[in-house]
Length: 207
Image 1 (cartoon, helix red, strand yellow):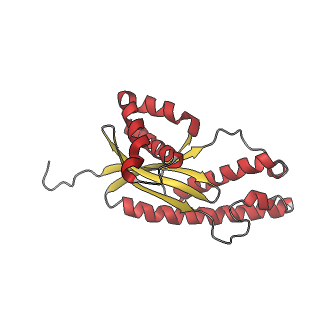
Image 2 (tube, rainbow, N blue to C red):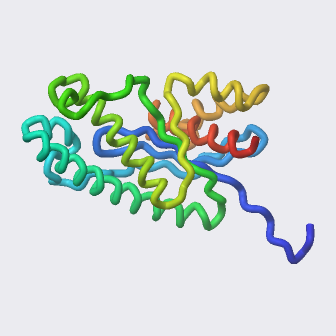
Image 3 (cartoon, rainbow, N blue to C red):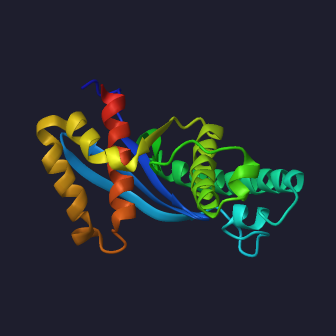
């Protein structure tokens, strides 16, 4: 290596599994099938005491439609700002040692949502809309920081990992599943899925 040339930074990626008002985030790096969990944290995307709390669509169902639209837009922008602030801090920390390749947002396997009036009239659609609301909050926060975003369905993770990592896939899945032994809690389905999603970002960038 040229003594005057800096070594290439290792790549890292973020995965997140969003919930109502918060997300389970994991940052990983990977080299030759060996997984390194760099960071894991809970990011809050609604402020304590916020109007509507963590369930903006539940609150909006009691409003007139035009008022509900305005309320949801305001909630979205507030949550996007909080997510962007949390990402900005994490990105600054990671970029001391890693090059951030992108982020992955885990998706449910729901159907496209109808117009707002129909959503607010059906309890199941309200729940589905809130899930999509927070996933989109994180995606837009990434976009505002020029972090490439990949959206991945949860049910496709195992198949996508096996396709991306081929002969190393079983080892990668095992390392992620067992990472909690050395890391300690929390290492639930949230963190495992977020880590796998982040690894797919790295695998796709490498292709």
